[in-house]
Length: 471
Image (cartoon, rainbow, N blue to C red; front, side, top):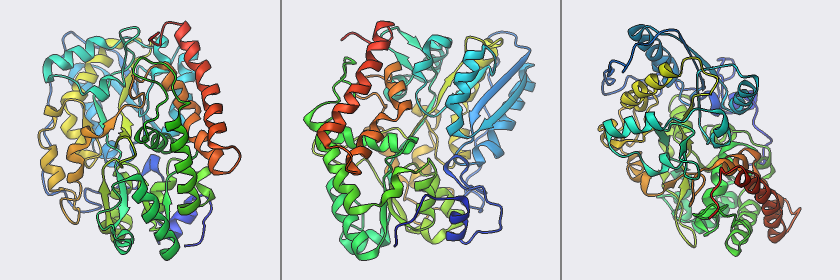
């Protein structure tokens, strides 16, 4: 395959033969169609659970959330689900969806203005807004009382241990497996896909040489590059912070991870990975022009409808083994916040408990994209993954996700997703660290030192405010 430039909507439509159909492509609005890529699901949707709120509710509740990567979650379920709950409890509920890339700026603008939505959902940590949001410890504790113990990776994505405040409520999450094309990896002796970073490098390089198809690991200012960069860093034994929230980015392990990324880029990729947006790897996989991406199952669900041949050829692997471990960040963290400005916090909290009680519906209508923070809420999940009701071929290709909690962690690993981690994430310091070395602008040692010089003041600032632990 010849090197291709940054993906555009027109290029994607041409590559997949969909020109003229009006498809809104992209990770933030993945084409989902009906269940199973247009077919009817093989099992019925879960029924809606309802519990009377603890107190009388009234007024308006405005909700802002990202446009789900699997559109059926929004169009077939969430919006009507929220409206019906409002009718049951006497609250006028409105729902606004915007692109995931636009959510952070919108949150910042609303918090600065002191007005906006009562309830906001985002897919990365919101810890940097801790001082402007309500403590949701009461909602989390009530959910624990009802459903058991929240998953550790969700707790660490919503609780600041330095202050004891739940700056967000995290009822769900999404795994981040590797998506690979079997027909491309089988000729290089890896029909089950790569299981280590070294196999990714060696197999990916041979695929690029012999089949002219590249890998899809971004080094750009977007969320997937952020997640992939952390997975590589941890697997080599590096980290941004330690368990005591001290900056440890400048280490031999981090330098080794950057050196590896240099080789991975040189042997398996082309320059457009430096300018990708959050939809680029999805679109490249769907179009059949990438051999492997580190992503959720949303691109696969889209390919079921838009390019079934690619869908049938796409399989999944867990976090890749590095020299030290095999671990990956959760692809999405369902962090909900209630701004201090909210005039209807009681309704917001009650809705969050209602949403949590119906995580089985969230999993179903997201076509198994959404996972619960309390496993008992979706007892069907393992069965669905073993025999996909949305038309996978083979039907058990998602079974690898049954053990995702064994290799998924929060973005602050091995510490919590504190406000400093949230700010570092939002500044894209980690993908930029890799990109400088991959482009030859700096040596691995120099780019790691630059990252440390950027990260340390962020931690110092939040530590002075008492929002990051002192170790």
